[in-house]
Length: 617
Image (tube, rainbow, N blue to C red; front, side, top):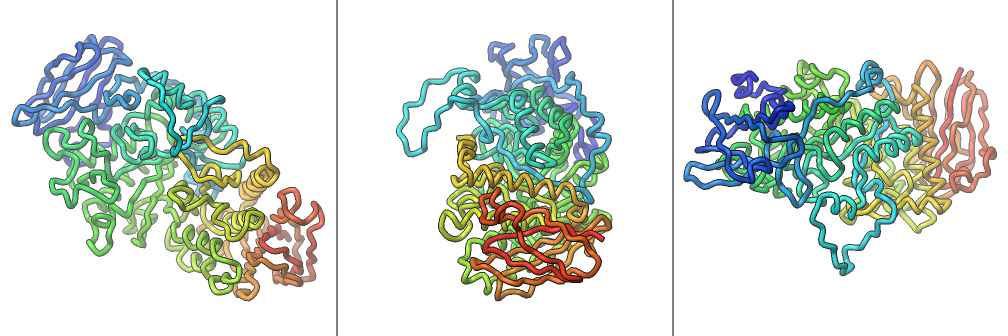
């Protein structure tokens, strides 16, 4: 490793030097602890007795070769501060960790797996002018093994005494990465998703953190198996034509002292003062002005793309890197901004076809502009404004939607400022917010048609798409990381037909080019955004292969004699009607009424419904 480049924050492959590297004849351990008085290794191979590490390079690095240390053995670094006190830490660059509540690193090989995804990688793209339809998944609660009984948090249940990782995994009902790979890839493919986005897989001590409070930035969580098994999951998805994006947290880390916190007896990775060191989530903020911290984070980002063949990273909480503490009034964090630019440039240079997206709730300009044009260099940004406006609109009573009519048109006033993804993510179905379908206004029977119409609006609206697991079956229970999705709801026609509707919508999205050129201003037009009194909208997406027209009635009354002008000389074909009886609507299959008269389409539109047409000359 280039030590000077590491200090300057230019390293992207620091994991090739640091960590525990097993070569078949033993393991080489290396760690960076510049302020430690000494460092030893303890582990299964030493009877948990100290084996001193040797200072190397400029004296700030420690190294040990241990022939007795083998694949699968546990270890920690015992780091002594300048007073002679010590804390046992897991390896910041470790490739594996033991299952909670254990806190040791585990010697894991990250070489030797033979990927069979060369064809996928050769044609992979960032999908700028292609469909990008993301299915967001929390791996431990998408599906669990049959026969596992869920106990509500309010129940008093005597927990069994679990002593081994195997017992814990069996009790929780988690599938391994290998076991769930085919199930997940096949489901995503059947439903019409192009990519799966996995919530953070870096090791974390608390299930309830969902992976966002990490202790092992290079360690795939052992909840679901080994690094090799995770490679198999990605490989299988690629072979089935599904891309895989992983959530990445470059902002902060868990406070646990066995991990990065005060790693060498000082605040090595975090800020020295508490005001800057802690954030709203109670975790510690990375100090992005330090070269060794920058090298650590961007090496982790590169690690997931290089070693595991992930197709992209969704970077969490970017607002908290742009502004100090995420607060605009506190000013810009120029060090973190420059780091984002440098990291994104380095990642795109190494992985041009990978997708780098930002979850950013700020209005900071040019998040998705190239760095050479003054931007941060992300490919995409989540459109959280679109998400909030859309859900607030559908939560309001229909009688107020004439007043709120332009909540659904406002997004197009700023849309071309960035390259947006439209997200209906995990954050919108937890903590008392209700699920997407539950958010729809009105009684039970009114929620489903509104949700169907809303999803048609989402597909018709420019921007790539993201939908969280469970939304596609119109789940009514909030997401809980401790239980699987309510798949039994598919026994009921309302839920089964809703999934079929999402499947049909996604198929239309994948098929028609007009829905892919999101960022070309000539691709989109409002055919009607002035019918506030009727709560009707008409969206048109254009392409040489034919135009897509979506007509949407978000009122609770029947709209007779609605007319939308589309021009002369078109063949008009109905692609989907959200009110069709096959989707639990009221219109018999094949009975949707509309007429094309020379240059306009006339139709009667049922309440809470949408229709999508193909216009072709």
